[in-house]
Image 1 (cartoon, protein in one colour):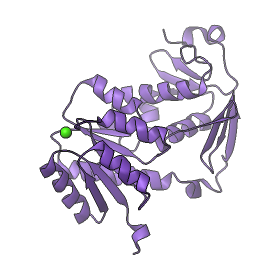
Image 2 (cartoon, protein in one colour; image 1 turned 180 degrees about the vertical axis):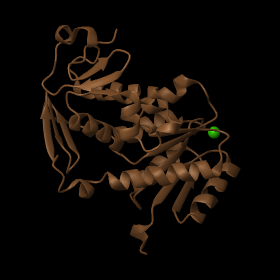
Image 3 (cartoon, protein in one colour; image 1 turned 90 degrees about the horizontal axis):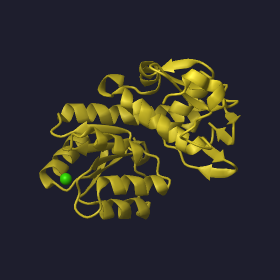
Image 4 (spheres, helix red, strand yellow; image 1 turned 90 degrees about the vertical axis):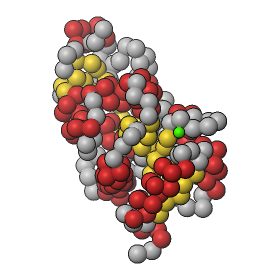
Length: 253
Ligand code: CA
């Protein structure tokens, strides 16, 4: 096995015993692990390009720059590796904010190390499956709707001709919607079809990701024309675009 085959995980955690404990356990699983105590050190490591980072385990409550701000920053910089947030905070709004800044999963402290390892393994397996190479030969290479152009082979997405950044999970959800164009999809169906561990997530996760797709693709996210809410059920993707009036009763309040 060469170094390139080893998955490289970055841990950002200020509590030393926890940082070292997670590092030790992930290394025991065969991962290469870098561990830092604050966000600026993590940013420096990412900017050094010494070694690609495949996944980040991120504490939210960090001295100086918060985990939220860090996550937002790296997504703005175009990094799209999975981010697993660790946090003692239990408020639902914290979790939502985490997803809003581009985190993929959220694990509440205190957590079981086996649970952490299982989440890491799943996130890495998912991102490996969802690579341009794995999509080659599939029917869906490029797709256009509304003002958007999507290339599922190169991961290039443009809205009004301007490139936009989507995370691997955003792309996976978008692809699922496109493959089921016009069909009403329940939140449970979306969770099962797009996320690997629907049991560990709530349907609010789906709502948060749809909100992000709307922000990216809808001319007016408050009046969606493509990612329509179906009251009490879920969502429906309409490529041609539907006016709020035509969608009528389907529009959520
Ligand atoms: Ca902390």
